[in-house]
Amino acid sequence: MTATSLPPIVKRLGSVSVTTAVAAKFARILRVGDLLLFTGEIGSGKTTFIQALAKSLDITEIVTSPTFVLHAIYESGKIPLSHVDLYRLNTDAEVESIGFEDYLDTAVTAVEWADRYSKFEPPNVILDFAYGTLEDERILTVLPNSGDWATRLSSF
Image (cartoon, rainbow, N blue to C red; front, top):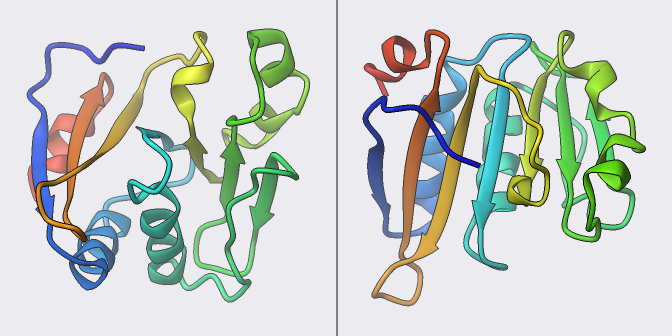
């Protein structure tokens, strides 16, 4: 999975409260049809960011990692959120069998472990999480891939 030559944005997230604030700011630029591709190691902050994103979208349901159900839809907010977790899937065919594509045009779609699928089409944005040097620190690298992401991310 590669992004286009648009410049990456790097954010140092020093705590869960900073992660929550950054997710809230990111939520303000989202629209129905956005595809958010999350990558990073276990525990690096993907689900925490998505939970904060959901809260900022006024989603009232409890958002958990859909590792075992693979796909969850949250419709109570101002924008529906389609939350996908590909951790337990190993092939493109397995990913395609869960049917998350049906929601790409009607929700913001957040895909955890997105690097397990090779056929995501642009436009999308990759949000890569890595561990920082401090215990609670995470490094978020945002890679816009086509569309108007570069323009929208300029305020982020």
